[in-house]
Length: 196
Image (cartoon, rainbow, N blue to C red; front, top):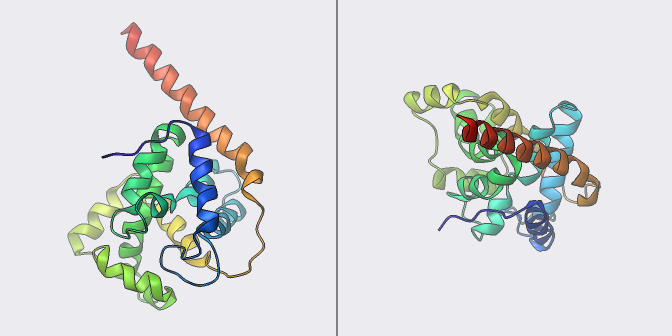
């Protein structure tokens, strides 16, 4: 069964549920799933201040952990399906690709594996391990793969217990801009389809 968010409020509600998930996708490191998303989004905002979709993808990238009860193999795909209709194709793609981006980086960056948290190392096998040369090539051909690699690096750096981050409420305007853009784009496409 595919879970799809009805609206932005449903996504925000699910993010807020992550505040009580102190497991944070198996990390057990003193921060919640919401803390992790907020840290990740802040890193994306600092490094890409004009890329609202990348920032939002960073915020919601692990929402699938809540939807799947921390299923490391499917959380990226489930999250992408959930947020896509509200936050758009690019946000959904980045959310989905943050998992294969880890596999890609482990395969292509010799130092990367040494920077992974113990939980991230453990989940790597469940997620498929290192990529084959064909998988590397296919990943590199995916639209927005370089942005997914950036998101993955923020994901790995956003695991700091006690880190002070802005609350979810400060992200509501950014979330609304992205959701409104997605809605407007869908309306324009629908109108174009009706007139053709």
